[in-house]
Image 1 (tube, rainbow, N blue to C red):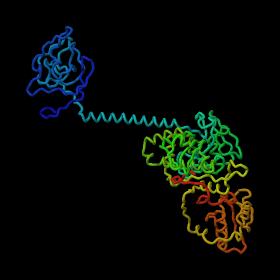
Image 2 (cartoon, rainbow, N blue to C red):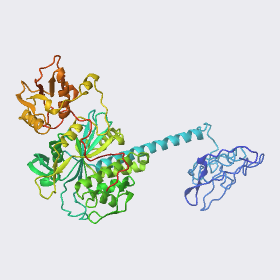
Image 3 (cartoon, one colour):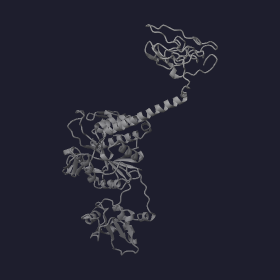
Image 4 (cartoon, rainbow, N blue to C red):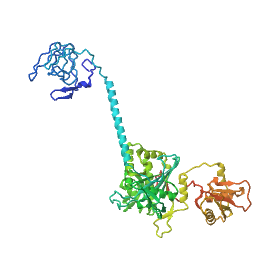
Amino acid sequence: MDTQGRRQHVDPADQWVFDPETGSYQLRLDPPQQPERGVPAQGAGRRAQRVQPQGGGRARPGRSGAEDEGHGAVGGRSADGGRTAGAGRAAGNGRAAGGGRTAGGGRTAAGGRAAGGARGEGGGRAAARTSRRRPKARKSAKKRALIWTAGTLGVVVIAACIGVYALYQQLNGNINAIDPGIGSKNATSTGPVNILVIGTDSRKGLKGKYGDSANVGHADTTILFHVSKDRSNATALSIPRDIITDIPDCPTKQPDGSTKIIPAESGVRFNTSLGQYGRDPGCTMRTVKALTGITPDHFMMANFDAVKDLSTAVGGVEVCLAKDIDDPDSHLKLAKGRHTVAGEQALAFVRTRHSVGFGGDLSRIELQQQFLSSMMRKMKSGDTLTSPTKLLKLANTATKALTVDTGIGSVTKLSELAKDLSRVNTKNITFATVPVIDNPAEKVHTTVVLDETKAPQLFSMVKDDVSLTEVKKKQKASDAAKLKGPKADPINVRVEVLNGSGVFGAAQDTVNWLQNDEGVSRSTNGGNAPAEVKKTTLEYAPNQADQARRLAAMMGLPASALKQGTEDAAPRANMTLTLGKDFKQAGTPIATPTKAPEGIQKVEADDKSVCAK
């Protein structure tokens, strides 16, 4: 603002002035001073005096001197006839004395034209003949601001895209993916998903910190993570490393691209399905399929460092102890109560076993389930999901820590899988341990074998997509009614068993089980059925309904398997039980249980009250 209150516009371009002494531009923030009204600028209306320049040259007539206030040595012609750099305006609006432009390239303060017009010594004509062309209109400050803003945003967008691409490439470069030769599903699918999570005890690259650095690593911790078709629930089955099982032939991809078949073994520890003789995660996947009847679609494998790094990336994992623990083997030393563990302490927690439970691997599994449940809750918490910094750190750590199959071996595929699986509510995720018993072949029990009564039931629930949490299935009222009502005593149940399962000896095995284990002494072997059938059926007369209900309860038959006739049978007539392809073995329920077998170890992921004992 001037003294009269008028707003004075200053073009930012006019604030840069050439300094002939330094040979560079300088920023002049103070605006040029305006002369008082009616007072002509110095030299206005008079012929400019000839000034003898230094060095013997003559000053050019028709140019105002740089001594005029506000006239910088820019924009006019120099003493040798060339133009000086610059384009700033003089303080006034008139032309310079002598008819030329001022040294600043603008008009003089007074506004009148100067006389003159002589040629300068350099041979150039003085600017007495001023240009009649109208000066090019300058862009408004608003337009210049918009152009500058648009340009800046463009640069920012390009930089952001480059940054995102660089991050994507970095995360992709972190991932180690191998082809296991088994499992063929895409990262996301419309059906159930089975992911085998393998924790290896490999010490490779750990410089002997946790034992033998030459240890190739076995399947020390293995969890089959099943996600239901409708993504409403998930079951995580822990497979004990010391369970005795059979390992099938394992085609294994070699570094040169060839495939080597590692021979099968019978009656060995499950953990040797990885690492031993060069077996890869694909071999562990095949062993799980042979053991459970469930085919893993993908695998994720991690080592000791993954536990340390992931627990740190989420800001620590809360765990609970029901007693003080001081384990010299795992180096875990914690007092009774709740703690947040990360890094080395988190690794010590999941490795300890001698100080909890029975001091074996089964007790350690319970610790690991508690730890993983807590980590899931932490990852799905608002504290993690709303923090870009934590999410980026977690993504970077996870991609570095994991080895996965090629089906999910990219950031895009992993993120698709994570988004798909995140739909499962934590309260509907159940951790359970495969039911086992002590190995009867050992005097000193160091290994275990499947509990053939309970394990098949649990595997059946997973295969048939039945949640271990509360499940409500709708049944037709007519079917449900078949299972309701009085049940006959086992000794009064009469049944003939036919084998339509395709399993050799199934009918006789069932008869033996009914007579010896269930007290159904009036059961007989009817031999093979006329043809193999898909589903097991029980045909009975209306007056045999109480017997049918008893047999259905013993064998775990679904209501749909009961086929009631229209006419009553003779007093000593047999019902007809035809075993179908859904028959597993004698004593194993035909129908998929809706509840987990009694006495199996399990814990729900949202249960915060679990404390290691």
